[in-house]
Image (cartoon, rainbow, N blue to C red; front, side):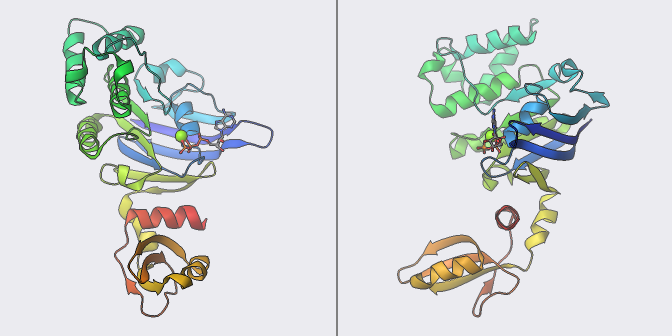
Length: 287
Ligand SMILES: Nc1ncnc2c1ncn2[C@@H]1O[C@H](COP(=O)(O)OP(=O)(O)OP(=O)(O)O)[C@@H](O)[C@H]1O
Ligand SMILES: [Mg+2]
């Protein structure tokens, strides 16, 4: 199973591109799509999900051009849009039944399937409650459940962990990992910790273009031996920030503990083990 995005552009306005000449090949497993706000993540995912069409370029799934043959994608797609709205008056069970009917999913196993999903997403207690009464995290989880009703082979989740508490994040991770043997899964986020423990590969994008794609280790390699920590006086921080890529600061009583990236560390810095967050911030801030 292969999904090829070939030189895809999306032009929203005369001078406004959501995506620009973007190419990426995606194989089975979990791809984490990382990028700051406005990078073009949703623009890309909507085109893969065939709810938006490229201005230019092609998207090929297993040799089928889905820009021309959207149904080929739709038949095997599970999609959670970023702005997923739900029907407030239906309860969770009714809503999944409704979505199943719209997707043409039926059969005698449907109720079992719905119960499995409600269980897997910890919504069993809420099965008979109207969705209008759900918390944000519960709404997000029912959105995830509807995307999985048809046992999709291409699963696209745009910011799936928004609103999920730590316990639900772990549950989500486990659920997704189980599906990854047999499907292409794309998860977007602007928060590294949402995807770093789960993604087989990571793609980093910014300004509608791909900055890098690969295994996490290969991406981290880009900042290897460049991450340092130093304690500086608060009044010196502004100047320091202008000269280095700062990853984080930690307020101590008198001083600031600063984690930063540099080819030429200042005196008394202590080298740190680089992680994906360092690499992500380096790649999206520096370029
Ligand atoms: N319908 C639209 N009309 C005009 N411009 C748009 C439209 N949708 C998105 N854009 C612009 O395209 C760019 C990419 O937006 P997109 O929503 O794809 O980013 P994103 O990476 O998903 O961001 P976020 O993390 O905030 O969800 C942004 O500059 C955005 O303003
Ligand atoms: Mg988005």
